[in-house]
Amino acid sequence: GAVVSQHPSRVICKSGTSVKIECRSLDFQATTMFWYRQFPKQSLMLMATSNEGSKATYEQGVEKDKFLINHASLTLSTLTVTSAHPEDSSFYICSASYRERGNTEAFFGQGTRLTVV
Amino acid sequence: DAKTTQPPSMDCAEGRAANLPCNHSTISGNEYVYWYRQIHSQGPQYIIHGLKNNETNEMASLIITEDRKSSTLILPHATLRDTAVYYCIVRVANSGGSNYKLTFGKGTLLTVNP
Image (cartoon, rainbow over all chains, first blue to last red; front, side):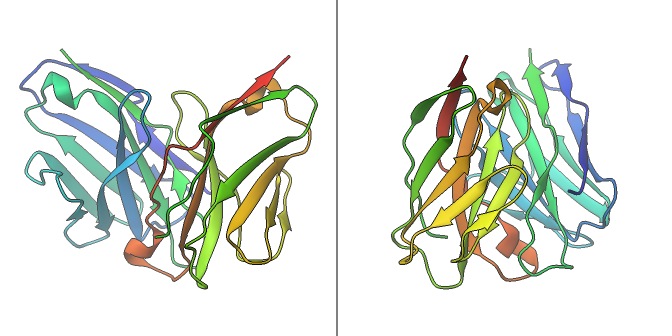
């Protein structure tokens, strides 16, 4: 299957600072990327959908000014958590899809563990 | 996307088959059944998907009932490394944009015991 890489895998930051998480599709062009968040012992919750070259679509309840998403190329999407607070500590996961097959699976990154202290 | 219902947890002995059920009684005719799994602290991993015919790949088999209201994921010879949360998801199989969106339920925690 296709490979999606996230960086960093773990990050610890101070409250009030911003953190950028990268999601790269290594061997395919991702027309659409998704960002999920997962709190301990809970399922993945979709935060936003980003299409290359256009603005991201955020799920209800997700602050677009706090979670900035940029999908500038077909292989890279970034999620920036601005002015992070301890309640933003979570496991952030991206996934990527491409349009070549009508019902292809989505490929997931390995996730980023964010801890805000 | 249609909702799915899965048991919260299951146990299986190493080397035996693991059969994970999923109910999706409100599935539409154009929705596929997808299975993913998530090993602790990792991103989800695709396992298999199908529409109405049974499917098999190197990881698992997917059995879908004739009325498509339920399905079973079968891991033929479970190993300790198969311990994970297994998610059954149904979604429309159109191409492009938000139709690739996956809505995760709570899944089934499969524990493979030695």
